[in-house]
Image (cartoon, rainbow, N blue to C red; front, side, top):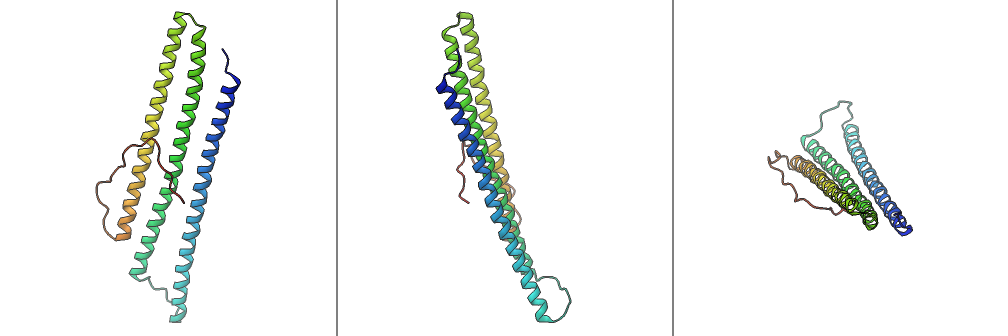
Length: 193
């Protein structure tokens, strides 16, 4: 048995939707990273301008070290920017993992449907073999989803650790030893940029 035209059309539309979702995730991430880089550039320019004003007011060309509070502010701002960068990349990865799950599910559905059609014209031995192949396809999809969930948890854990270190820099304290890992989730809501 061959795939029906509607099966082919459905698979094609689903693939295009998933490619669009992946592209959109990277476009959104790129936009957010560009905004972040622009904000970091503005902060650096403001700091440079303030330092040049101080030099002009003092009328000396002595380059003194920045006051500790300005260094602490710079450290806090930098830590926040790094944390936000990891958040953006983590969100993009989560979106791609969800897209991959959806695509695998669509392809597996198509394969299973084709196996069902083939089983209709198979003898008992062929039907048993088709049953084993269908079981293998379901197990492979389950394994893939478990790997995708593990990758999602790993990304969440890295993001939480970076956020914790960044918060420690902002607060001026040492990071806590234990990082709370979010519970496993099939999909993660993408944060608005």
